[in-house]
Image (cartoon, rainbow, N blue to C red; front, side, top):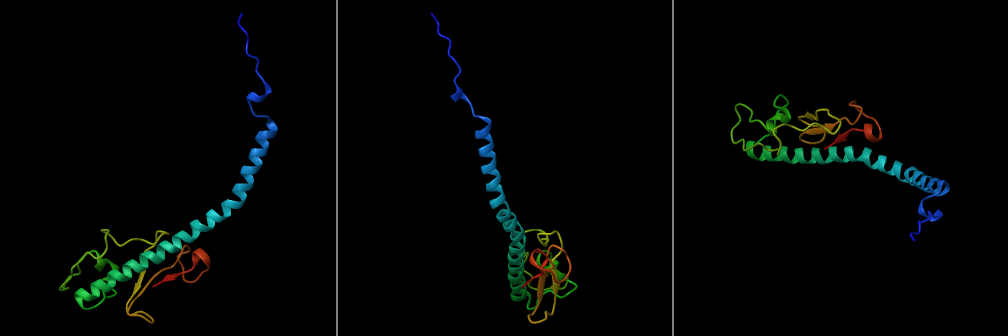
Length: 141
């Protein structure tokens, strides 16, 4: 004779068990979520600092080869496209075909001469205007 298997109470989860798991997951998201968001916001600022550092090194290489930094009219474009009338240009000095935008999609600022250095290289942050705090703060070389 065949015996029918009876379904026992241990085959599934109860509503209380599911609610306990949901509460635990909610607490984890509440604790970990703000940390992750903080890391994401500082990541763009850190990326901007890194790109400014790399472009500063590329400008130094341009200066070694050409004997001067790109003038204001040549701008950062001189790192990827040879300016007219320049001898000993040995570029492109950046690995990409174009000058990168900052992490917020804006162009990097370049001023020559700089305030305290031979050149100023900067990003205006998330808000695209001078000054600001946190993610809106300016990033300079």
